[in-house]
Image 1 (spheres, rainbow, N blue to C red):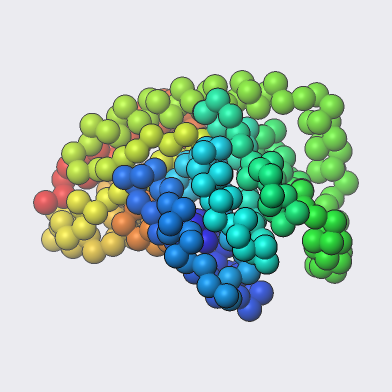
Image 2: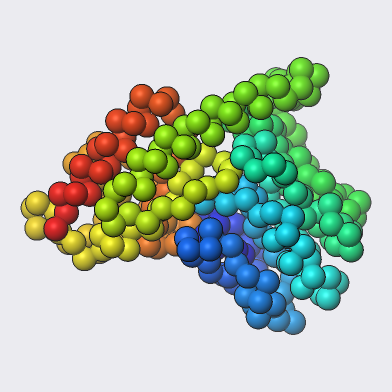
Length: 279
């Protein structure tokens, strides 16, 4: 698992009697593990690799060059499956969304996960799909049919209409998210002690808050973790963020810019004011 990661991945692996192995990355390299890190993590017990692009929580987008460097490693391990979560495919601010499943030599063991929720603003409807080798699809279908049975007919009809209408709305939505990202970024980078990179997709920032660990609130309470900082910001700044512990990055916090420009500007102002009060 590339870390940071979506919170469910580790639990899903454990549910399947697997052992999650984390490949850590940092904000300095846009949360992208190197191909050497990937190679060093592989053992004879490795069964799959999983990551998301664009990534939740970091907003990282793995470029074709990035994915080709991983392919060069994985092509030497024919028994390892690649699970690529691409649910944020259409909220991508780069010139190209590259799927690792499109690269030669590894298609027959790549499982691409996607859905309608983010691309067509259908969050909550939960219409998802995969692209995978036939034997994998059949095995998944057997399990799916015994757990959730099928998606509801209303959501299926909504998904059908989305396909018929096309993704013009997704393109317009992406442009709005890009505008909001730039507004939030220009404000975050001016906050002393907050380390922020420029995410290339999704609608999240995942700043490093190491500078604030060990500082104290006006009441004298010490900020010992990202969870402490998030609770402090909720109580004193009245803003809600998510600590990075469950994402595999204990020194980070996640904030979403899926909100109005007015609310985002106010939220970052409160964030700045609250952080500046720590000492």
